[in-house]
Length: 89
Image (tube, rainbow, N blue to C red):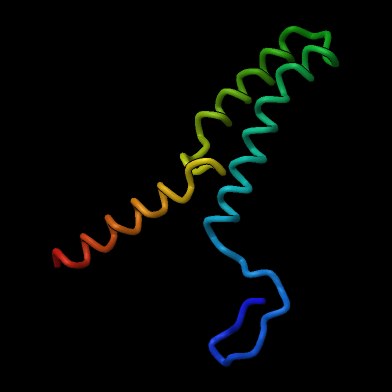
């Protein structure tokens, strides 16, 4: 159970921006990785397969650094950098 500031239990999920970002990144990576083998199985047109391959590469390269495996470290690093900048001003 999670409690709000009022002391009452919260009976719903708590939306966490990092969690949403990680889930979206993981889903996009999965789609990008599946696109190439699936296109090879389904598409006969080499031009269409190449187009899907190129789109997969672009998608993979545009993903952020947060993953399920490293989000705690990267978030902690980002928060400490933010804190350091505030203290410097």
